[in-house]
Image (cartoon, rainbow, N blue to C red):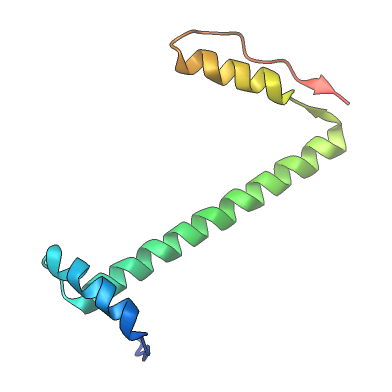
Length: 93
């Protein structure tokens, strides 16, 4: 089922996206639908990330255990440099 929604677009916005749609051979309608789908997916992913981050923070606070940020940064920097460093050890508060 397709829901009907009327959007009143500012003229300056329309002037910006119509050429983008035309450049990829899509109608303005198709381009807007795809843009909305992408934005919804981004917002859902961000919400899931924030939920996971807040849950991890809550668990860390309850347990009193976490990782030193400097050690994690050093670990990630070494991994990106192609090294195989030892994973940081958790620290207690």
